[in-house]
Image 1 (cartoon, one colour):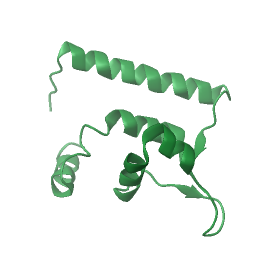
Image 2: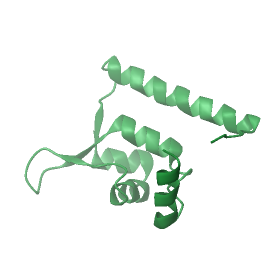
Image 3: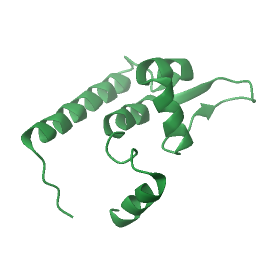
Amino acid sequence: MKYIFEDFELRALIVDAMEIAKIGTRIAEDKEHSFISERQAFKLFGSGFVQRWTKEGLITPIKDGNASSKKRYNRMELEVLAKTSNRSTYLPVKERENFTDNNI
């Protein structure tokens, strides 16, 4: 499958990749945590997006204890989803399944 990108689209993809790489570097250097709380995730990415990504199975919150323990999320997974969520997840579920099956 071939993709044709306009200059501005390619530029946006490169900028997104650089931003994700910067965060990954900060995590690797222990300047940022690799996991963030649900409250932080909602604040950084929007509660609606985080809840939708969770419902769609794109990300899974981690709970370290019982039912009342706090949820935490992988920061890099959230960053990647935030940068790519407008590409295929806005398709209806059935179309997204076909898109994924045909483009792997």
